[in-house]
Length: 388
Image 1 (tube, one colour):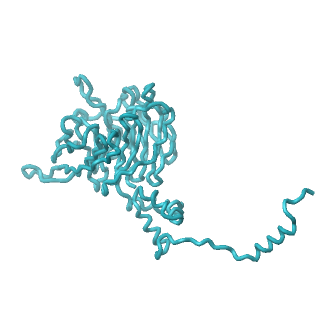
Image 2 (spheres, rainbow, N blue to C red; image 1 turned 120 degrees about the vertical axis):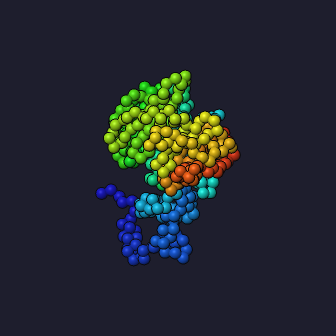
Image 3 (spheres, one colour; image 1 turned 90 degrees about the horizontal axis):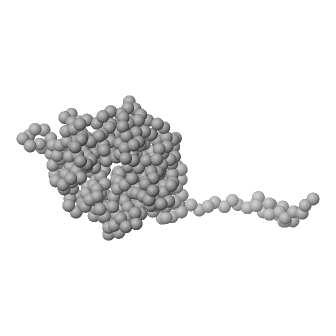
């Protein structure tokens, strides 16, 4: 019989001592002194993004509470009522091409730098920042970075990276079946659609389901298009190639109807007047013109015309290049224009009396949020609004 690692008498004595000992109860410090923990947890639910990550360092009890599965479930249930809009900007350093994401709290004018985005598969060389496409599911606090291109080989990528504001973290998701660059992407009904790309040679369209982490084919475009700009309004995605030199033919544009899983031609007035970066506010499509001083115009679906929005152009201190997005929800009602150095023009769309008393018109009222000096060398290439 092999020898034991300790004498039998010693083991038996220790076992007897253990049976007679009083069990030790770990002292749990309260989350907030003077409040029951269930009330304190309700207070923690109101912590806005991204202060939750900072709050974990307050104490071990806060870290346990904020990291628990029950708290995360409660936060998800309360998201619609407690979440606030944040402006997320995707930018790159002009000298190094280093990619960087940051979020702006427009209530406090404070920027927060996000954790570094993981390097895309196949992206171990220099990357072309504008070649990526981005899409968001705002109500779930999720954004997605798709595709891209290596700058040295001009090879398109199959990237799909997901960021979740609830955990302030990135993860790699199922790569796109088709490598793409300079293409359109948008979210409809909680799914992400990728369309077109390259120099217009891709007509395939693919749809990503985040819940299943799976791609599936969608109806293909009538003809492939490279992205000039794209927008989702309701359950339709609009993609335009924009005007191209020598400007002797009408721009091409297509509209994807998710309910019918079908494409149709974009109306002539819409595609010919789409001359800038778009923002969707309250279900309406606006464009910040790339020409002149950056005036805003709105699309009227009834007449297939664009009309000027009063109130002036993007403030002069917000310098090009622009990344433009909209608050999306009617209660936000703002157009965000991110410029060089991440100076931000925040335009609030308000109704005003039309000339001659003919109903109501719209005007945009601007204010500027200056970027911090540390962002002076950054140029934006995409902007999105998330509720977090």
